[in-house]
Length: 182
Image 1: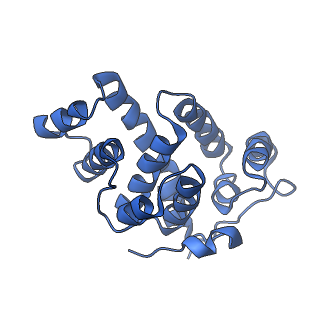
Image 2: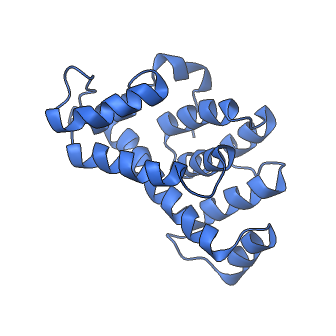
Image 3: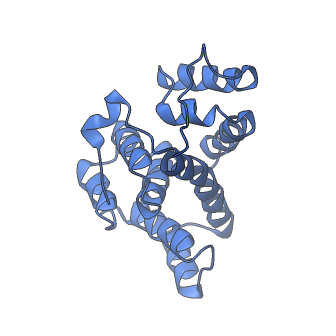
């Protein structure tokens, strides 16, 4: 079995340290996922760049968390489900909507449901959306530009979801109350 170390600010490769430092400032700590990703400076720096675009985009932070939590559940990434459950609640999503997504159901909020439905369809269908899926998304008040932006969020979460699965990461202590299994 391959072991993936979880680096800290002090132990990370030199080229990964600036990204880890930025994530530590954003979260008050270096999450295990970032520590594991630091083993590849290209991956951790790519993550920071892509997530900068995600969080600087058109969606609210709550909408981003709907997408990221849906992606984590769809990709069966237990670490990411716990992390995005924590962040979704912090961003004001209701406990009911967070639980719905964790149980592979749609949130009650219609806009959030449209985001979740589209993200799940993108992942499950490997990017192939039928006209019905696109129309349902647009009918919820979104446009073609935002559909393309959902693809960015799916791409960003794929990096963390896959890393968490490949590295078989343990949950950070602060995430234990949000543990999830498929």
